[in-house]
Length: 234
Image 1: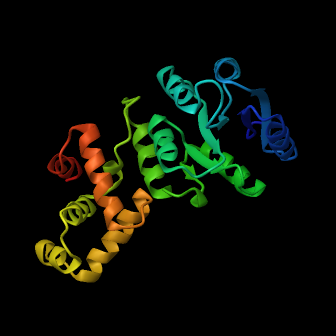
Image 2 (image 1 turned 90 degrees about the vertical axis):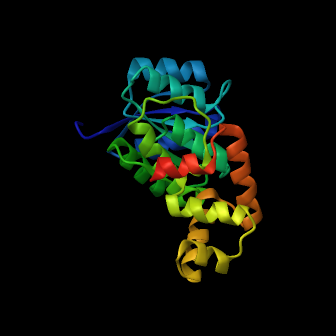
């Protein structure tokens, strides 16, 4: 029993809780300590049982997942949190990572994948469902959250980009074409395209217009300019 991962399940859906519990009860490596249906029950369960991993529904009543994540982090509780969500929403995924979640899986994920996610998170690793999108961004922000005391801050999408990717995105937002970007940065046009592919993937966007809009929104929300981000990532 020493290697058994102790779990708690927090979800308002009885059928989901029972299904997950049956799945995990059948596996010798997991032990379900308790269940919760709302935020108050969840915190009571985590504080009293101190499970290794909490399976937490993103939309848990009444306050949803973020306040629970922040409370666990503020109280320095040992429980690692694996978020369960119905749909792959970029802002939800990244905000959960920043608030302290160690993993993120969709409720449609196969049972074997859920078991793998729980095992990885219990071992202190970051795990995110590749079908959820923003996997690389989630991993980066979750890793930062593990070593940071900052809590409650709004996600800045630019945080997931490298210095070069920020440079490319900044030029794109100014309306600069790929060949001109290549000349300005002294790189090849295919390299510019590769950077843009990475930018689109990390930010979960589809085109240059969305990238430019996201950059402007980030500047407006944070009060930071592009060059401040370059200095941070240097």
